[in-house]
Image (cartoon, rainbow, N blue to C red; front, side, top):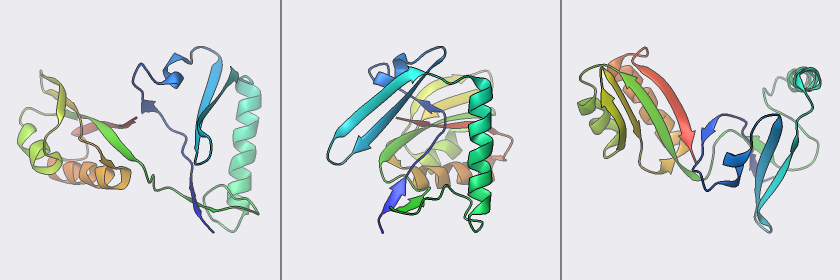
Length: 154
């Protein structure tokens, strides 16, 4: 069957993205379908106890299905962790002389901070798996402790 990509993680959103207005106890999900385009669902969350119960049930379901390590359903595509869409990556690095390594690995970047031993940037657009490989390469070159944050930018 076809591959299906699903991800739950923190991301950086531009202010014009509809999800950037979701605040407080509300949740939002943006689904992009080939026939529908972007569709957003928005509403009040269930609360911490029902949410915790659902997460535990999901983990038990994942573990009990042949050790797949991913959500499972009978019909439909195969779940993949590879995002097929282009994205950017926010990276925060500690160190005084990191710019040459960043330039060597990521090329031209949008610098957000270059002060006081901290360097933060947003990468050029690329495939998520390629950007993650570059982040791993940066960690290998500077040390894992030097790369403090990597967050997908939508």
